[in-house]
Each structure stands twice: as structure tokens, then as C-alpha cells.
Amino acid sequence: MFAWQQLVGYAASALVVTSLSMTSLLRLRMISLAGSLTFLTYGLLIESVPIVLTNIAITFLNLRFLTREFRGPRDLGAVVVPPESPFLRDFLHHHAADIRQFQPDVDLHEPTGFALMLTRDGLPAGVVLGTRDDTHVTIHLDYVLPAHRDSRLGNWLYGPGATVFRRAGVETITSAGGSDTHRGYLRRVGFTRGARDEWVLAL
Image (cartoon, rainbow, N blue to C red; front, side, top):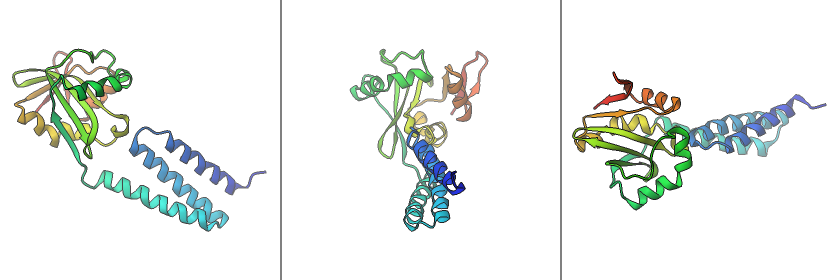
């Protein structure tokens, strides 16, 4: 017969294993926090000082990361790059399979007229591709790496970060929408459905 304290330990182990399977850093930290708190409870129940001390430290690290993510300054950026840039093309090729899960109809082989590289803490985090007509940009691809999909890059790009579009002379942005998941994303970051079923954002 298992003691009920053991069930707490098994639950903590399951949470830790689950956290390690997350591709999103934010989800990893949140589930890891739940796991460390459960392990802390387990350590207290069985009066194990090493387990208690270890999970106090892990809980502190998770809370520090999450606090910085939600409240602290985030180093997010976007820079206009040449559509034919070798780095951009390599990035698209490397992540092509993941990109097509969300926007299966996007053409990653043809050069585009407008391209942005998105960054997080100075490292590549995503890409926006589109075509430009004077002050209007039609977005064909808006992609963020799995690890950063909870870092609110989209909210930043189409909110405070939209200056990168304005500096380039862009006044309106549209997107076809793509999958249900992508349409939900567009709605969350401020786009509205237009008269021709496209999604529109006025800057």
C-alpha cells in the first residue's frame, strides 16, 4: 500500500517531467514552479532537509524568472532586413516544418518585399514577411519560435514596437489570417476583421 505522502512525491515527479517536455520557456517555468512547490511539500511531509532546501532554491529561481517575464523590462526588438538576406533564408529553411503547422500556405521560397527579424534578448526569435504597396503592408508570415510564443512578442510588435513599421512609412497592415490558431492570435494582438474577410491593423 502506498502512503499518501508518496502520492505527493509522484505528483511532483510528474510535474517536473512534464515541464521538461515544454517547448515554451514560460510554460516550462510555470510547470516547474508547480513541481518544485509540490516537491517542497513532499520534502516537508517526509522531513527530508535536502529535498526541502533544493526545492526552495528551485522555487526561488522559477519565481525570479516569472517575475522578470511578467513585470520586468523585456529586451524585444524588430529590425527591417533585406528579403534576400542569407541569414533570413537560412532561418526560414531551418524552421520551415514548424512554420507550416500554423501557416501551411505560405511560400518560403519566393523573396518578399518586406521582412522583419524579431529578437528577444539580442537573439533571433521570429520573422515577419510581407509585400508592400506604398504605406500598406500585407503580411504573409508572422512566425515566432516555440520557446518565445509566450513572451508576448506579438503584443509588443503591434503595440509599442509598431514604431518599426511607422519609421518605414507603413500606416496599415493586413493579414489573410491562415489557421484558426493564427486568426485567434491576430485578434489578440489588435487586428480586426475587414470587409473582405481580411484582418486589418491601422497604425
